[in-house]
Length: 238
Image 1 (cartoon, helix red, strand yellow):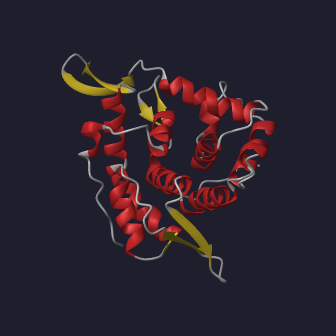
Image 2 (cartoon, rainbow, N blue to C red; image 1 turned 45 degrees about the vertical axis):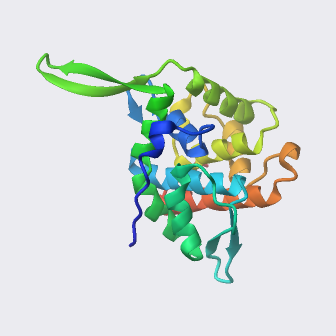
C-alpha cells in the first residue's frame, strides 16, 4: 500500500488557526498520564480528522458507488494554503480514492508533525524526568495554554447540553466518538445513555438547525467517521 510523508517543517511556523486534527490530538492527550488516548487506532482517527477538515473547507467531496464504497475527490482550485495539508491533498488530488484506502495511507505520518505543532503552540510541552533515579525520560505534560480545557468544554456542551454546535464542534465531537475514546472523558463528559445517543446523532451527520446549511459537509463528515469505526474495528457502544 502506498504511504505518504507529511512535511514536518510545517510545525516550525505553525501558520494560522489550529487544524481539526490538532484539536483532536490535543483532546486525546491525557494530561494526568502524559499518554494519547486510542494510540492503537490513532492513525485512522487523525487521517479522518484531516479529511473532515478538508470537507469543512470545501476542498473535497465524496460520492458513493453502487456497491456502497465511498470515494473522495479533491475540488479543483481549493487546495488549503497550510502546508500540513499538502501531502494529504497531493494524495487525494492525484486521483479519486476510496476512504478506506486514504486513511491508512495518510494517517501513520500525522502524529509527529501534529504533536510538534501542539508543542510549538504551547498547548503541550516535553519534560525531562528521571526514571529509577538513573535514566532520563521525556514525558508529555500540559502546556498551560488552557486550549485543551476549552476544547473539552466545547465538546461537553454539545454532547451534554442543548448547545447548537458549530460544524467544527460537531465534527470534533463525532471524531472523538468515532475514536472509541469517549468513555475515557468520564466524568467530565458523562458516559451515559443520553450522551451516547447524542454522539450517535453527530455520527450520522445530524448536527442541528445551526448547521442546516452544511448538508454536504455533514454528510461527508458522517461518512468519514463511520469509515473510521469500520476501518479501525472500533465497537460502537449500545
